[in-house]
Length: 343
Image: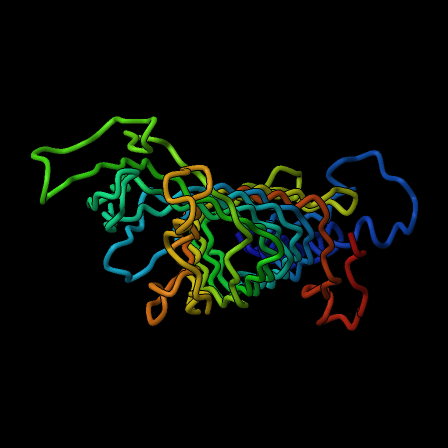
């Protein structure tokens, strides 16, 4: 019985030495190639979140987008979409995640403007006065923009591969243009001479449901500061993946799929005073010369607020990874100061 107890004690004492030998198997061999796969690995079962990692990757996202405002006669809908492409750097220290980069985003958004009726008094070719009415309906104001975005986010790796990122994002408008469309109908009335409504008399400039469209330069947005939140899941698609044996010759590939929300904190309403509707006095029957500016660039928009919003799905692929050196914990008690080889 005494021999059995002695044997068990020596067996238990030999476990750290064996683990330590496997831990440094590839480092102590130098550049010698070892055919045994168990010896070529570092020997400890870890996850892709152990240690300090430096990652570089690309992101692609698609989102619903809208220009939110508090103007009484302008709706947020129907909105539009945004598409973004970026290059990002990520720093990962255990569960702590810090990410920064640069994105280019395309945005195409529409806002519906309430119907409007304009009236004026005119004189016909016989010198008779009449009331000329313009009914403008189904108006949509469209804004297309290209932004350069600079995000700076921090977050955490949570249960499994779930992650969360949040932080500010600077959004700078690089290019843009606007377009306004509506359907215009004109009618005439002679309150002091004739009974009834005069309509669909194209040869007299009285027309029905004519689609009109005009284009102009971009909305002059200033620098926008956005609050950004992203929540998703990360997949390791290399042999450094979750619960794999660490190897010093493998790449660190990661794929993330997440949902995000970006909300503008800055009031973007331009300081312009254009006319919402412009009908030339000399050619007020010539529909082709009518002009309309985007509602957010008009005098009617002054004093109101305007904010950007994007909400959608982001796909991130990190194709380059570098992990800092780590100390050998098991070797510390024996005075050996060797480190893992960088990979």
